[in-house]
Length: 191
Image 1: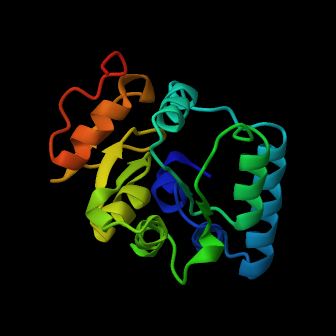
Image 2: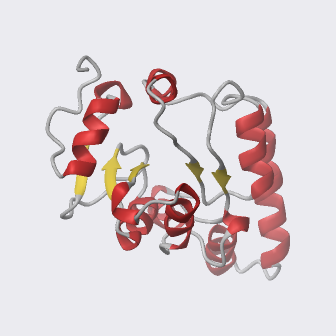
């Protein structure tokens, strides 16, 4: 794959990536491509998925302050379970949602709406931390506040989106301000 393929695969469900690969390569077996992609990604996750800078500190801060949080992913359940059994084994997620848990996954709003329902709060009471255009679109469509920490692809600015270069810049107090309508001062050094 080339850089031009990134918008078609980054942050997408495995089925979307497989469909793109079938279109560009002419491979006739979309299901076989999806199975191979999942197996390859699973193998990489099993070898260890590094956390983004600042993620461990922020997750620990959320837990210590009693703020419930979940992992909402467009990855299959098997991959999500590997991540939370490996690199995130020490993290106290309230729950996890995978691509297998809703009728439609990102960029549709279904995953974030399901998460808000599980938390028992309105969608607008949630901050979604996202790194991809499809993830941000999913959270936007659900009505969540979106904190964008881009990784591989730029994420366009839109009303309701707040940007940070790194999770090292983000604190629980900053996340609370995001929900209250102001993203200024996301700083980790703040109380």
